[in-house]
Image (cartoon, rainbow, N blue to C red; front, side, top):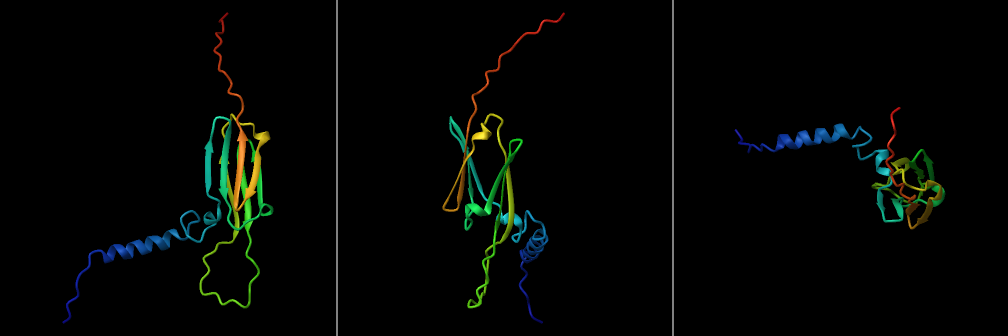
Length: 144
């Protein structure tokens, strides 16, 4: 009879692998999802403007569409698969291709009609001027 050393962590490794396989089927959690294609955002502001920088590596400005509807800014695009090169023998390809959409709700105090968009080195930069802050004035209303 052969003695086998018991490893209590082995069962947890198996459980972890099963959980990984389970979540791979969901678009948000899986590594083969459209979520992987969505641009990563940096959103920040200063006293005069609101800024959004979106990483879009490998894309050109012609591949990207920006729309605004009721203060919801949406960036859509497609990362296209380049034509297959017959001379290459692929062993692994981890690049992602396909359509993506990413939206962000903008604050109310922006001049959305004056959005400035620039695309440079795979980064889409949007700057939106802030509107004048409305001074809230309290008015007493007389009850008749």
